[in-house]
Each structure stands twice: as structure tokens, then as C-alpha cells.
Image (cartoon, rainbow, N blue to C red; front, side, top):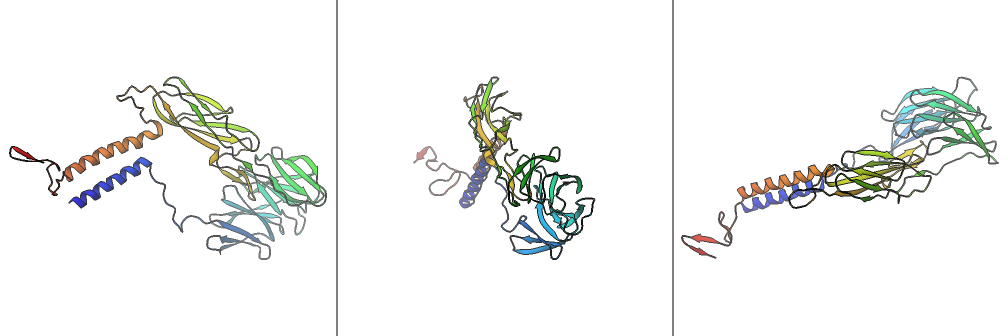
Length: 372
């Protein structure tokens, strides 16, 4: 009986400890989840091979257009775009089914073999692709939702070769083998400027925008008075902080363009206040890719959290109640501990030194006399 009681007590303590710490995150199976997939264009067989990087094996072969050249992945990883240089098309591959979902004609004119786009980038929102077409000396603008060419941009120089996009998605940079770099305005889909490079430039890459590093300071005030939240000590490598998104922990949120704000809490307690920063390049907590490289290197450092204690609670004992996000777990732990304590008393009565139950361990009564 004592062994069973000890086991029950240990289990009860374990349950309370888990609840006090919060529910654990679900474990990731060692061999589960989706692997990283590699898409390799094969111009010789007019196909794209899909390689499971975990298994190091080809898991699918997808027929595409004539002489596929480059592969670009959408920022959300759901679509692969393959530029087919031989027939002037773009194959749109659904990465969930590993099948061609659509094929877009790069242009409406004809120019013979090897006239198609050779490389491309996708805007940060995933809505538009810019595909370089060197044989025609222009750039195709493709709507990713419809896989249709919605514009062609020319006048940027002869032999466009490489392409990159700014982290904010405002400018597309195209290298031209005639010795220049074209700057394309994505709002108007026109050449904004030209930079002389010399020689025959082709490869081009841009440094990713970096996530701000958030720092939050809080000056609490009593209930009904404004509490100050200040993120002015936050830092970032490029540009400026464009927005500060505040979560006050009581169900209220706000977004500002300045580094500090005030909030009035309606009830006393302890709250978790959070600020999330977004840079002028659009970078916050998540990473964004152009399909070729990461252009927004987001991360958890763009968010900071602080506990806020708001006074004014008139309850017995003078302590502050736990409110907001932490209220339910704390109340649950307290109630469960009380219930388990009652069950243990009923099932496991006190035991004396000789192992007899039902009497105090250090004091027994025999008639009128007590023995110790």
C-alpha cells in the first residue's frame, strides 16, 4: 500500500510540475516531417529531378519544357518556377504534388530556339516574378497567380544575364552583358536608372536585410494610470524601424511608427507585454526568399517581452493576481494540487513508525495514557 501511495504522490507531483511549466511542445519525430527538396533542371532530358536531401535520392522526375535552365522557388516554398530556354516558356511546378500545374508562355512573339528566359526572382510577397530573357533583351513580368506574362520591360541594355531584387521588393537589379546594371521600378515596371559596370557582368546578389534587435523597457503605473513601454534602445543594421507592434498582454494590441507608447491597464495583476519590430526593408521575425537567396533574414530577435506588474489589487494578503495569459495555468495548477491532496489523504492515511496506518506516526493513545 505504501508503495502505491508513493507512486501516486510522485505522479501527482509530476503532473503539477508539467502544468506549472506549461504544456510541452510536441516532439518532432526523428524520421518525420517534410525533408528539404532539391529541384535540379536537366536540359538534356527536358525534365526536373526532385531530390530528397535526407535520403539523398531522386524521388520524382517532372517533364517540363524544352531545355530547362534555371529553377526559382517561391518564398512560401509551395511553387517551383522553371525557365525553359528552348521553347520560351516557364513551367510552374506544385511542390506538394511535384507535377506541372501550369505553363506560361514567356512572350507572344517568336524568336526561334534558345530565346526563352534563363533566370528569375520572385517578389517578397510571392505575387510577381521577374524573368530575364537575354535573346530578346528584355525582362518578362509574370503574375504568379495566373502564370501569365503581364508586362515586358526593355531598354535596360543588351544581353540581360543575372537578376536580383531588393529586400523591400521595390527594385529589381538586372546585369547586362553590354556592361551595365539596370534598375527596374517594380511599381511601374519600367527602367528607373542605369549604372555603368564595364566588361560583361552577369552574376548578381544582394545582401539580405537583417532583423532588428528589439529591446523593451517598461515603467509600470497603478491601475487606471498610463504605463509606459519603451523600445528606443532597439538596434538594427540597415535602414530604420518602420513599425512597432505592441501586445500589452491584456488582449489589447497597437501598432505605432514611434519607439514608445503608453497603455492603461484596467485591472491589477501581472501581464506579459511584447513588442515586435519591422524594419524599413520589411524584415521582422520570419525569413523571406526571392527563390534564389534569402532577402529578409528575419528572426526571433525582432521581438522582446517583459513582465509588467500592475498594482492596485485589494485582495487578502496583498499579493498581485496573475492575469491575462498566465491566469488559467496558475488557477488550474492550484485547483489540481488541492484535489490531489484530498485524494492522497483519503487513500493514504498517516503511518506510524511500525508501519501501522490510521494513527499519528509519533503519538498513539492506549486508553487514558499516551505513549511517545
